[in-house]
Image (spheres, one colour):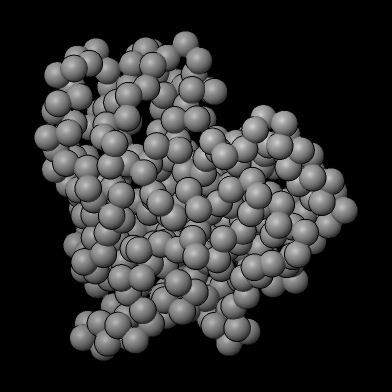
Length: 309
């Protein structure tokens, strides 16, 4: 945060801590947030971990440092809580690639199909789905769905990866994460040439041409865990750049190279210390989900959490 002096930054952090205490608030942050947001958070995790935390927190206020669909999931799982998203414009382009009407039409086209919905989707889409999944548990969820006709929405890249791992035939929605989709096989090959000793760790939201070049494919939490447990000392990282903060903190004796400069999510970077403070102060912007949609969507989320135990 170049515009803030260290003194002002420390002052804002202290204000946040005081407000958090007075509001009985918890701050949840995704691995793709700026490092200073991660350091301030009570819990840092991937989508599955954050959903689990939101479901069990005893705080009165949840400050979600992530993007809109994550805050929506928290509001569905904890309807009695105040859920804040410090920047309400922090959206997800992938989630916007499908809506409830589109999904209803696709379900009519494939009678009897079971819908497995990636959490990177709106509450309305979750309400039209049978079960949610994250990149951490998608393989487990797909294996648990007995039906032969499965529609995986909205991430086609993740769907193709899970189909390859499970051997199941899936119908894919043509959605994608622009940040991960922009990473190319050529980027991986170039980095391998530069750092031949490094292992390649990538997110399954990447294109098939990318994950087939990797030594490990997994969620953000999975990538962090793999790096910690591996004997290797160098890694090429194929996911959003925010993960480097946790990797460097958890593995100070290891070296990490970002696979490409395209791996930056502008929406994840919308959250700032000032916005977290202002959100706690004014208890806004609040993320709410209508009771009708929440009552339908919670089934898919609870199915996911149950299958993830």
